[in-house]
Length: 189
Image: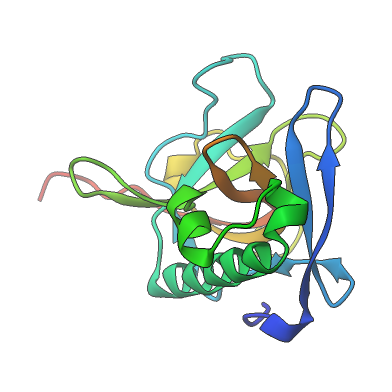
């Protein structure tokens, strides 16, 4: 398990533009990737999915956030806003204040209309970047058949920032998971 990184060791890389025009900025921690693992197992309220492409191997996964996740994400997002403001002309094309950037920043901590909170990340279930799963004996295992029936200790890679016309946010990938099976409780007394 890792602790919250020292903010003075975080850095933003150069602005990259893909062949499709998508803009991103890599986030690094002391020259390497920013990878963090929370201390507590997280619950998954519903199955990972990709609403726009049912056949996709890259899915969104939502976790029930813990106070640790909320704290880490708020600290990281605040740092990202400050770092972008320092180089706003280079990254965003115009000088922008922290307040202007904060207005565009889309957090990974979401609250639904009904008040339900979630922490969103991405997960690859096939291909070369498939999420690696491990059981409680720390032996490699296959992906869970039902994510809702387990708790997960995810290794999160805070990969980059994406920049769109009216939105900025973090790209967070689940690189590995320690899986804890949860036994279903009988609903009858």
